Image (cartoon, one colour):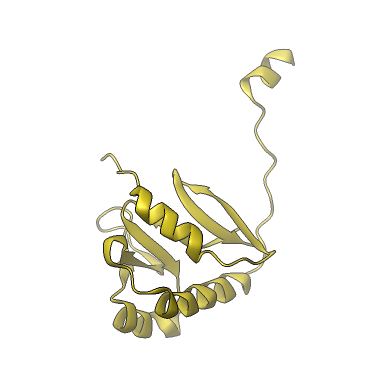
Length: 128
């Protein structure tokens, strides 16, 4: 199953939605733009969806307010801490930003993940 790239307009919108916070690290996850705090993904893109990490007690509210659904990167493989929003019709920034901030706060509560050492590049391995 080949995943599709996120549309350019959604990537641009994502860039405006990620909070400007010193704790936030931007990088790609599975080739899609994503934002992390303490090594934990809290908001990102997957194909044409915006995904958010949501606390269990907030799932019903975010589903109702933003028309979010449980995120399934593959059918039948739900990631229960995450919801997906259709990126083609995202709500305005004023409705979405508070949920992104809640997502950041929820992920920031988790213990920091240990950083893994980077793998040696092909050139570095050949020198050894």
